[in-house]
Image 1 (cartoon, rainbow, N blue to C red):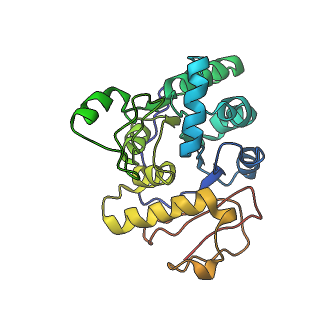
Image 2 (spheres, rainbow, N blue to C red):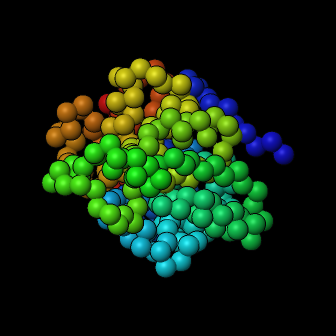
Image 3 (cartoon, rainbow, N blue to C red):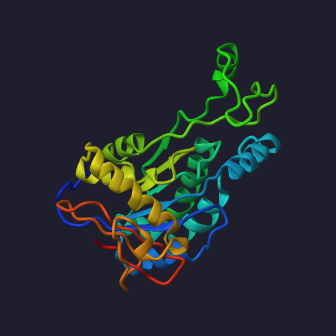
Length: 260
């Protein structure tokens, strides 16, 4: 069965639910958002620099480790059947320093639950193979301007939203990345849906991604310079194709819908 989906681009709102802002965030968000029936996409952000270090250490002890295990064993385990049945698409940077390991674990979960799933992995953030060349070029540590340390556990570049968009364009139902910009899990969705290329909308989509990720810990609406307001409403992000991107949500807090 061909499960590829084409971008809607201009065919009504896109509803994005933010289920995680960090590794260790509340586990209730994903089930709440999926049960609401009001989302088209479920996005997860798990990574910070400390998290990457923890994951790199875990991979040293166990080669198949190195990803946010909660994404597979808790979040997706609880919603996978319903996500697949409803056609909800998932984007997550839970891959950490081992995105392929994360994808294999999710594929095993899908097989155990009898769910057919198209999983895409975004790679390219691991720059460990480049360290010798970077040292030879005289690249130094940014803060202290010291030489790069001889022993490095992990070295990763921040990827953007474009590879996520490409994966969604290709029909992936779940996109797993390594280190990417926190807002990219949302911006990639918006680029896929609406074909955005102009900087104004890309900037607005990035803002939406940051508010979706950390909305429940964000400032009052009046402190956000773009004028986002958060009246009571479903816990999902919405976007329409003919307006500037100002959508946001967070589920692990009182439900809110952002609008301009």
